[in-house]
Image (cartoon, rainbow, N blue to C red; front, side, top):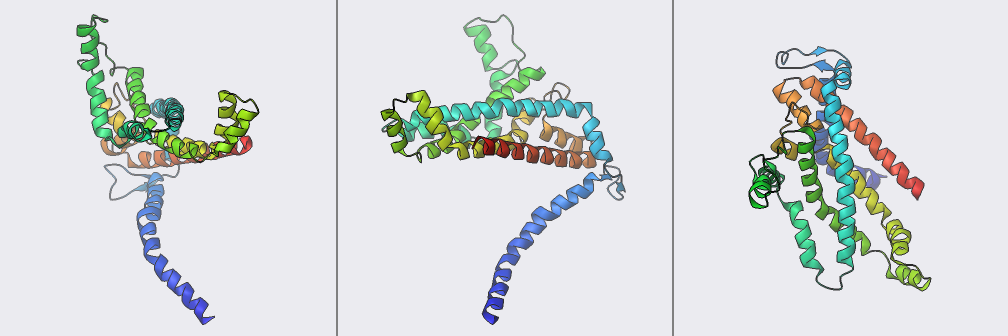
Length: 292
């Protein structure tokens, strides 16, 4: 009994520093943020925050600008997530089929992943700017257009450029994840299927996809969270212009907190997005369980 008690004390002592850090930097900020979301907290009320209940949540949900911002985030996620996964899986299949020389291709496709979001966003902004490289090429090189195209001055133009960047930058990560999963699929399954007369499509849908279903679910959940967390590319490429029409939830949250000074609104928005992400993750897991 003494040895068991001593062991429990040792375990507690070892866990204590980690628990303190977790409580201080994770649990406490979440609790403090929730309290902030229930108060009227702005530039004029730092000293005395009035408790207003769920008024901030109602303001967020009835805000027409939030509806536009939330729609942009949903569209960004719906376009970039399938794009990254499909292209990443396709490239992984092609690389996995190579008998040699895989490493150069893996490095080449992974380079965009390790490229800074700031650098990539500024390059895309330079290319698609009204006086940028793409318009110069279209107007002065191949003479396809007589005047410069305002790619970034409209809602859908700016969103399209941001989604193109998000898809391009995430293909390499998906390629690495799916390639690792493909290399765990037993070759005997493909050999048996070939003996039964299965073609490439049957092998892909009846063997490959079921074998890497867990990896597909992992990538889907992680990319969905990443889609809702997009910030840098939107901030640097469009900065929400025109009139916050290209803002997403994080850039809108930043604007409401540090430009408009509505910290309670921003805190409530963060909890609403967290709830939405939790619901989406549960739905995705349930759908994959049903397919299983």
